[in-house]
Amino acid sequence: MRPRSIIHLNIADFAARLETMASPALKERPVVIAPLGAPRAVVYDMNEPAFREGIRKRMPLSQVLARHRRIRVLPPRFNRYVRAMKEIARQGLAFTPAVESGMGDGHLFLDITGTTRLHGPGPDVAFRLKKAIKKQVGLDPVWSLATNKLVAKAATRLVKPLGEYIVGPGEEADFLAPFPLKLLPGISRHEARAAARFNLETVFHLRRLTRAQLAIPFADRAHAIHRIIQGVDTNPVRPGSASNRTSELMVDHEFATDTNDQDELKACLAVLCLRLSRDLARRRACPGGLSLCLSYADGIQHHGKCPRIRDAALFMFSRAWALFVRTWKRRIRIRHVSLVCSTMPVRMDQPLLPVQADLFHVPDKNPKKDKRRRVQRAAIRICERFGPGGISLGAALNMPDESAVT
Image (cartoon, rainbow, N blue to C red; front, side, top):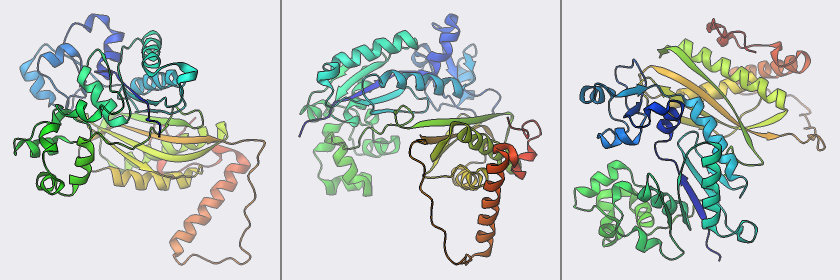
């Protein structure tokens, strides 16, 4: 079986680099990306001079300001990070359709297995992609080439902030042996601290233990940890928004005043669902999964996913609100909400086959659920007759500035 060729690109201090690009005078000064005005805000990102000053991600902003009173603090702008990440992923599509990117974290995976005759050896592809990103976006990523995502990501952590690394087939175990556990992908900080209590600080130390012994510090994670320290990772590169077959629609809202009022949050979600529904209708696209991102006032984000939705605004809102309730786990005020819907284009040359209706109507055992379905069908018929703006959601009326969605 041919070994895979996985390229991982990592742009260190992604958000901070984008912000300092807009203000070149800040490049040599310590800069921290963190929400302003939040009493319990934490550091979202920082540039290299701030890192050398001892500032780290998730550090309380009050602690940073107490130590460095003249440090420059900039608010995060998530839309800018997402747009830059989409452009970086688009550059990767020139070499392979298997491109996996985050929403705005500066990480990119490419599976170039079997493309040697078309694009050349893997290191050449990585170097050309790095050059293209630097030209188009202005960012200089580090890159690594390995046989799986785990080893490739570990290699880029080793050479940050500038450099490249190649791990050949069969070299995974030797490469990971001296690796510190606190830097190894797949092992959390809590697990690294649990191992450190037993004086286990590197991969080599863990390999001397049996699976039964690994269960002492890691419990039911022992089997997964054993695979990680051997450099075994079978997870494929999952094409996301950069895929040539699927795309994504994103709508978001940033509150002028941070809030945790349930009615206001519900109204915001209703408005976003209306926007998504109308964008889907304009593009004649079929919706796929739905992703939700909540950004709190202190800079922490929570994410949630729903595997399948429909383009009807009422149905989408019911799913989105259920997803919101599952994802909303903190009492901290929310600053930014975004919804991302994966889409598939509808082929006009292949019309959808009609679905045969039931001969006899069988009411749902749950009267409330059956009533909701009838309301949804009525809303769909209204939108089909009068267009996507023919009906709105009552919950959206609680947003006085955005009740009329265009």
